[in-house]
Amino acid sequence: MTEKQVVFSGQVTLPAVGQGTWYMGEKPHHRRAEVNALRAGIDLGLTLIDTAEMYAEGTAEEVVGEALAGRRDKAFLVSKVYPWNAGGQKAITACEGSLRRLNTDYLDLYLLHWSGSYSFEETVEAMEKLIAQGKIRRWGVSNLDDDAMQKLWQVAGGKQCATNQVLYHLASRGIEYDLLPWCQQRQMPVMAYSPLAQAGRLRSGLLNNPVVNDIAHAHSASAAQILLAWVISHQGVMAIPKAASVEHVQQNAAALNITLSASELAALDNAYPAPKGKTALDMV
Image (cartoon, rainbow, N blue to C red; front, side, top):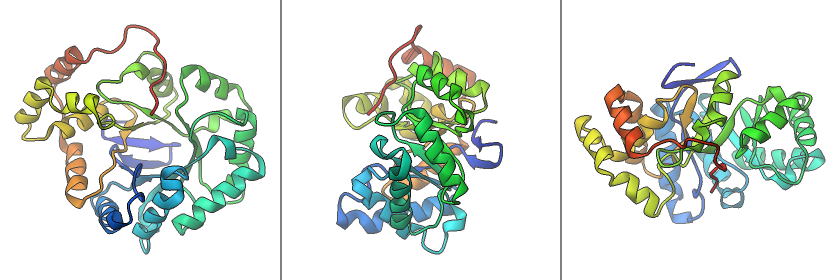
């Protein structure tokens, strides 16, 4: 896997920036803009679209389904299952519900949203059944730390896990100590959600950091584009920022063309150092 491209299951190569949909579908008057943004992203090559049955209780999936009308074959479609639906017949029913809302007959990737109600054995069995039924092409996980990934790896069929989607940005670097190297060694892509941090003081601090802004100025870019470029500078890592407008999607896509120098990476590392030891996995 090279920088700015990520390979899933040794089969599909995608740009290292995709499209997230968290918070989409919550306000009906934003729906047209959200659909247009997703379509623009596909046209710009941001073909991975990530959603979940949790997002707006399924309405985000409906937004994605509308955006993909007539262009499903151009997208790499990802959705996620609630932990309490991630086993047995519940998993089949949940997946079928997502497919119905997305107006498609298959998912390219189906993720366990976080671990919980079902054992890994039960979830893997359900995922493999969904593959056999042609409803999903591959499966993965989200919000699993290094210890949980090692446990999953010991389960029969667990090594078929295609990705781990976790929170990762410049101010949240805990995965670099153990989880990211573990995934890189196994050529398992990491999908970084909230790559610009969640809204609030932390995000504001990142976007207004003088080091980040000096680098942005040098590249004639925005601070957000520099933060995205930093995330995808790591081997096998892709970012899935949400963009609810065409202009925002265009800015995200342009981050693929930014290559940070060794001195710039060092300056960012100095401003936001990686932890020196194991830390609890950040989740939001």
